[in-house]
Image (cartoon, rainbow, N blue to C red; front, side, top):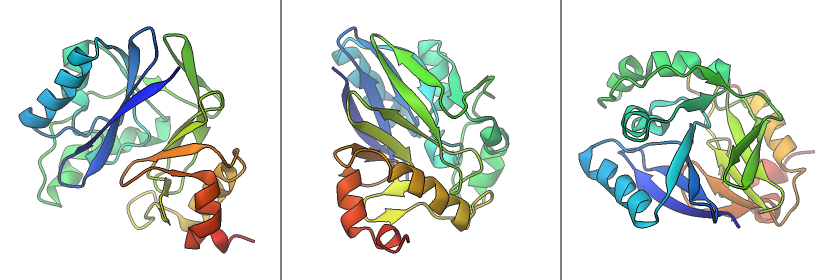
Length: 214
């Protein structure tokens, strides 16, 4: 059975997730921890629950989602997995974040690339990669049919969608990605990159961007 712990980190209030099963192996999704205090919060949760991190998965490379990448990779000796189209965001994270007055420790550049349909395995569990560009060029979501769970990054939010005015954003592309997510079972729980969780059914019914989809 897949379980998760959620943390809200950094000035942008990004959601970081620890996702694990009965084996104790876990994946970390979007390490947004931005200072020593937040690092300790994440580290304590891993220790208190006797978890073994095996992979760091980034739904995309915007700086608020990767601020803790170096800390996580160096502390737990694990590697980062991204879509290749997000490389430029990793390479430019420090310079881009400085425009917002935020300092980001340069993340290690990933060498593990994910494609649509790939499987992310940990313990006895797995997630399928769904390629969902639009918020950024290489955005991905992670989906488990068995657990009825979707980690949507900044593609889909409760009552909203990802912004498309940042470099690599494209509204029409994003809406095509969201149409793909709306094909998932309605009882799928959606864990977003910011804000509260939701479900596919609730977003179909109430999300103003989605109710207008033909």
